[in-house]
Length: 232
Image 1 (cartoon, rainbow, N blue to C red):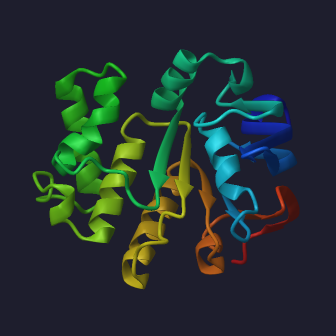
Image 2: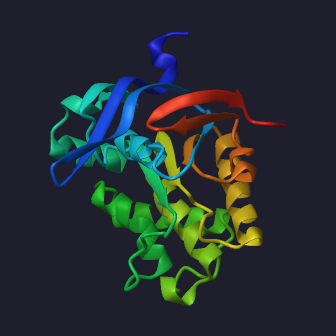
Image 3: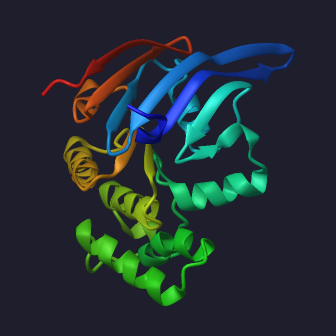
């Protein structure tokens, strides 16, 4: 398999954080390859480095050292402006607590990344409405986030993450704040997106969530300790 078959490729990826005068390592030389169209789950206890790894792949933070290439971009060498463009065009991010703008309605929340990327408003609106319909949100486009349930808000967040047709969808504990039924609906939506060819990298501590992925990586102390195919 050639390097071009991987949408995410990392080698020797390291990251640490300072607290006062003490440096705490978050990642200790991670090697990772994710194929285009693959659904990969990252598992591990709190502090294992899984969210840090997701943030590096999304260009939200920079590694201290190592090689990181995502969607054909060498992230460590990129300027802040280039990283901002990369995030708009190449990755979609779904956060556990949604990160929606409460003063905007659902439709505008979904449209916003497309507008920031330069998509004409009419095209952004049409794409956003199609996504909301696909995710079962027809009739709720004019509602603001406080008027929606947790599961509905997460669906809006997923639509927002998909609006620019990202090469990689990153999901950080996307079901962690939802009840079991709502979480199941969200996982079904992610599985459907993956079946359409969407590459997904998901962080979770829940084995039942990880079981929806094709491959599970177990992190501990900033290292990948074990890798396995998800149970069928």
